[in-house]
Length: 198
Image 1 (tube, rainbow, N blue to C red):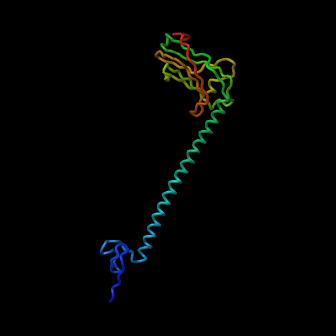
Image 2 (cartoon, rainbow, N blue to C red; image 1 turned 90 degrees about the vertical axis):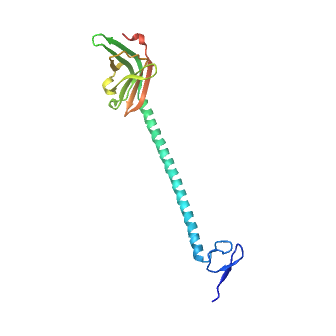
Image 3 (tube, helix red, strand yellow; image 1 turned 180 degrees about the vertical axis):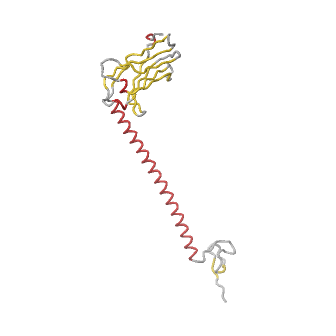
């Protein structure tokens, strides 16, 4: 029986036909087509995995960017809705009052707001009056439905009645109109402490 040989493409030595490696230099010999086919499939498999990975990355970026734009659109629509509702309000703070009751040993505060314009549907809105110290820290606040405090008048309406057992060094007052915890419109003013009856 004649043994078939082949030449190593690297070093040129003759090696048995069934050898997978050159006995002289160790070069890997592809002696059958199925090995080459498997190698090609494996390469194609790697390419396929890389393509899947790229598609997932690009898809993720697109989804994220669309979500971001949707969020911006939602924020813009909320902002435009708030701006529209804010245009239905016009008011100013005309005075802030305070006095001390010796009988009750309490400090009482209230704010007078002059409403020039309010929407017809008042029950959806809340009036929040916040009393602030010189550091702009909330030292007391009151909330009430606009429908409870507002009535049609050309005069200022007293809102934000606040009672305290200790002296509050109020520096400013902020009046906010809220709807579903969103500030629709606000107004603030410094307080003339000389007007307080303490």
